[in-house]
Length: 213
Image (tube, rainbow, N blue to C red; front, top):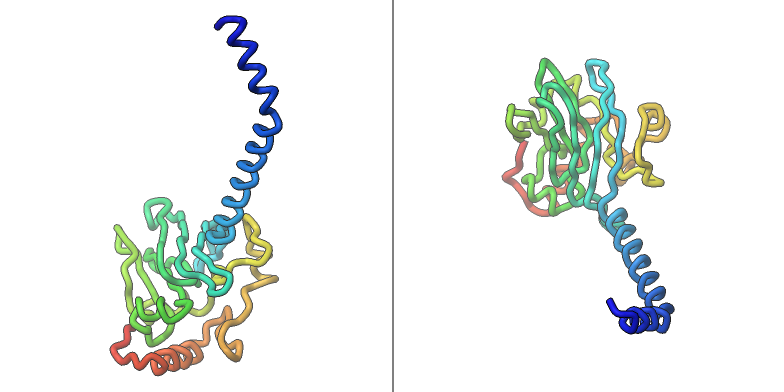
């Protein structure tokens, strides 16, 4: 490159330095805004989970979440030998539990609102259950889950306040998700009759009769 060209290029940079700095700053601000939007719309975290057989595993939860609505869909990455390694359970639910009984992996969750309830055909027990078939999580009637694996939640069904990156068993035991329902009747310990009552109210509201198990 000739000396004249180098001088011309340096002159251009000097004349436009402020503009270049401003553009760089604006791009950085835009990138931060996009990242914060993604983080608020798709919160994620790791959490320790105690299974009914005493094992403690770590799962990774991610949600599509709206402040004025809640969870639209969720992904839970579960690493278990019974699954052959890490497997992601995707659903339109707020996940409530993952467990292993007699070598079979079960997961279940609760629909957030009418769209999710309709997708799962207004389940009679409100909660929606799946069992690992060896290749995929396949839906099963909720009561097919052994009782020991459906007594209470072991996954955070809510998005944790403060958006932590990891939640320990101890932290979960101290600060579980707030109870749901108009009367706070849907809590960590699963009162099946309370869940069924709320499910019946939803079905009646939308006049839905062909309901799933």
